[in-house]
Image 1 (cartoon, one colour):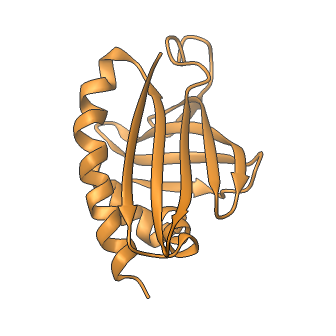
Image 2: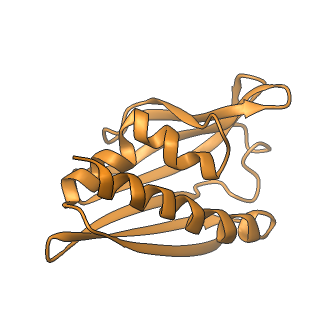
Length: 150
């Protein structure tokens, strides 16, 4: 498993950055960098099951995950448990081979009225280049959303 790190400084209070990152409407906007139509079903409370979904060639595709940690407005940790393929959840060992227990962590640090957002994500060699290209684009969109929100 490969761990990737991304960060960005956002000129907005931590609570607003948290809301922009995880709120349904704004989540749908900044995650278009990964795939148009991306969204989640579930909530961000610790222990909750959450599905990260988007359109695929054969219907709804995505990830089955669990919120491993949620400390508003400081940190949220997502553990990926399986996939959604053709609208069906699959958490079998074959579905998660090579990335079982992968985490995606968001840390929100106060920086004198601004917020530093840190993203740490586990990935495989297969998806490393895609994430290295896509996360910076997503964070640029996210920064614009968070700084323009009132």
